[in-house]
Image (cartoon, rainbow, N blue to C red):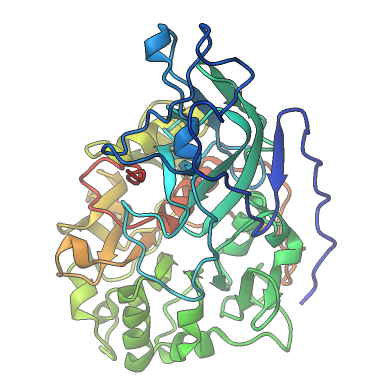
Length: 481
């Protein structure tokens, strides 16, 4: 597999924020009282009082709680830290990213697939928390004031730790520089999920990860040191993604083994046909067990077979639980270029539509162009979530609805608070094939993101996020009390 030199890292500005790379830790202060705290203004003479005014239920404040300033008693605005979080490339803002000030050392993530439900952070005992909106912006209200304030930005196992040189009491400290406020592009910059890509001859999904900013050094073959492992899928000869190298591990080995459990996210890129010969019942059962344990699965086009293999005759396998999540139809040819309509009837869908409009992917709110759309499903079955659809496409001479993008949480059929994983199905590809190159990364074009690629980027990060009931609005984790 050919790997080119990683893109050079842009040095971070050093005026107001210092980045703590990788798993670096912050030196947390001990409990302090008002007399010991200082924010550049004296206490007792009209300056802000650093009295630890967080809601501690009458208990003594601890650590950074003691640096939360009682601005209201001075008739001043509350202390805030605001910013915009960007993708690893520093180009597009990201939605539903957690921002928080930790009050204890942030611990390493557990290796392998885990159950990540919304509402509780794995570590850090946050003093204040917030989520980014569709514009990527967050506001931390009642943030601790002073020097060297730690800040964490995180979505799923994407995580970056920063240190703010100074937070001014009773004022806003803004942080909007994309070079500083982007998620990690390499392991040296912070935490990244473990990802596996099963390549496909009709969908170079790995190229999307390059466009969102992951450096080429993170793409390796199975067992490599990178955060993105490439496995050899099948596809038409001469199409990008069809072959990597003679030594690349087959995707069939990934699907059939316990190796799946080491990955936080697995993407199965379209192989141009279903290829049921590589997906026996045992592999389907293994995929289901992976998602049930907390794995995240991104399937494109013909990989609908993992969800409902019964559409292929003769029937060689089944997945009765997942097949109920949507109404699939026998495979047909694609629909070409069509508009995709965003379902805005739930909170995340509304944010998705606004995000697409803001990043220039939508000519009109709730609509974006899709090239090479396919037609394999007509609609979702509750409680699955429809994200993108079209109401008037289908086979020749018909006007049937098309389900172009949907998700469901796993295990299917258990209570919401027992679900740990998530499956996404997309019936359109990353991009059209632009050359006959078959090795990564020369298969990938260098053009700006297309509208549908931007849509897939949003969905990739949503797939990485914590698990929640999709009809509810996202909520930040609860700070320590």
